[in-house]
Length: 229
Image (cartoon, rainbow, N blue to C red):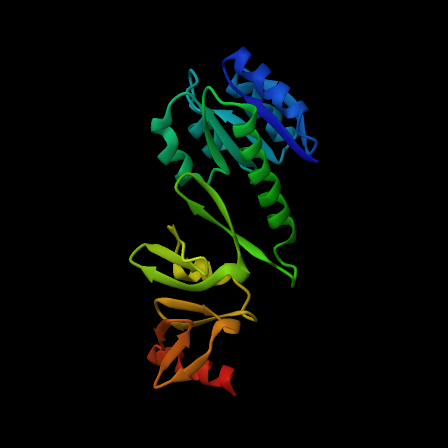
């Protein structure tokens, strides 16, 4: 079970969240709060896995409250103002729901929280099959088997998938390397990471995979050579 609390200065909004949580078998909504200060005090004694958090509240915003909480709780922001979405992105929110919302939209958000919770709990296992990256204002799940190659451009990473789709996320290349198993992926250039299993051949310092040619950077030649051996 994922332990959660909800914080919103609107009691009716809390009733909706409470009602929806009762329909989700893996969410245990422990308490609801209309006053952010009361919620902050509660969290000091009783940490939870997930926060349902309104943003536009009197006295302190949900964003300010989340920044002040000294724990690694996931957060789903729920607000009537989409202008706050970028702040939610910067705070690594699991999702961002704009009021009014349906149960179906709520279910999408909590399913993301469930998957991310499981991923965080098991990401050190050898049989890792997917990663999470942040796209727009929420987390996106990417199967490792679907990755064709990864390219870094300025402050962004482009993840090219075999389906021809491209996922773009703001993350450093080093942080992306840390997400991936060195057993299955290799960095071959300051701007490229490739799945080892998809390398078809290496010729003249060029890696061929499907119809893409990836250059091998000078400082990465030795590790590529060791891989081939």
